[in-house]
Length: 463
Ligand code: GDG
Image 1: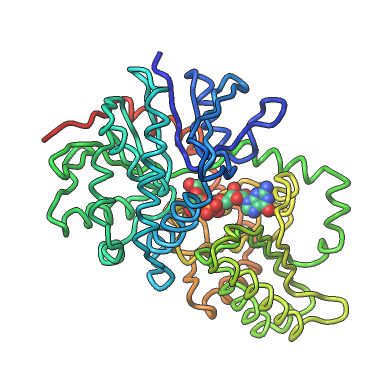
Image 2 (image 1 turned 90 degrees about the vertical axis):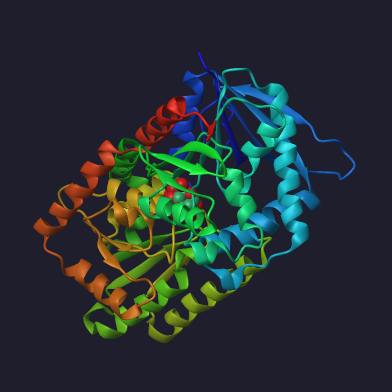
């Protein structure tokens, strides 16, 4: 049996009982790894001294081998905080204005990819299948091939692929494009991402899609496809059911249970449109007097990437904005924006999704957005809430029962919130059923199986 090797920047490690950490993707990949005697490689999350030689620490848990490496501070600053999160992340989310390109960080990015290739090569067996995740590791296949690796290697991009003119603002965009041509399979969330990728190749004059799900580029023929990621739908449904019966949790929610709750859940990230959402919520309250004192926005936003300056600045901006709306509109007994800048447990999150009448998921751009899917899966089938979803989230291409909005237009968002709140029950049920049917059929296990079965058939060849 071919082993499965997963490589990602961070590795979600199991707890002391060997159970995978919460989160659909980690659970699905763990299940696939367990079936295939698998190995998961990535950064340990620890920083090592500059002088210490690179090394892999391996450990077994729950039938999976974890191979982890520490990174030097300089590597981390240049590869992760630098090129990955200050160039690729903003540009792939069409925020060219926020990209800070530095040649040195780009070399750090390639240096860490070479390090990953050096460390992984000795662990590989002849028929291992390798699945590389996300923008941190685009050059990994090319580096492995240089070291003689002939295994099947797949790549999945968790974030959007940008339009050509946006990608071309990265000074080394051609090296990134070429790097992808070393994979056997390159996967995206949506057809839009795939067609942007193809457009980049065409405009560069170095390739295009060809029939049958293939791409010909830089003299190579490899597979390309669309694999929309999803959630563990059944698990989320059952978490929400349990939360609805959990007296302690319900007691916790008592203070907000009498209000119409509109919920937002996002990592603190400028791509998620959190400040635009708060502005739209203020507009909604101002335009709908009868909602004053009766509706609140519950915005749950764990901190992320605090080492990157844009994220630190945003932390302050969002907190100030929430405070301003509360100061301007709040009363002694009503706080319009409940802003929680911490991570909550998944059962609690599921319970809050269930109690919220509106799921307000309005990223400015998002590869998929799992929160939108979690909100749907957590609803009460007899009295579901309404998903208000940005048209710029990958999820908008699947969740046809959502009320779609333009997150740049506060008026239309304000209008959509009111429309969601007054939507009759039968219309809510009809919309919810359509979305839930999709999520039941296309859960994260299906995503994982679809990608891996395509990868098993794929083979990069010179053409
Ligand atoms: C990237 C792409 C793509 C959030 N707050 C809490 C919490 N969360 C969980 C949510 C959800 C996850 O974090 C966020 O997933 P998203 O998909 O919304 O966003 P990214 O982190 O940006 O992920 C994205 C994804 O990769 C997968 O391919 O969909 O487009 O950007 O699961 O529930 N979880 C807990 N407490 C919180 O406070 N427990």
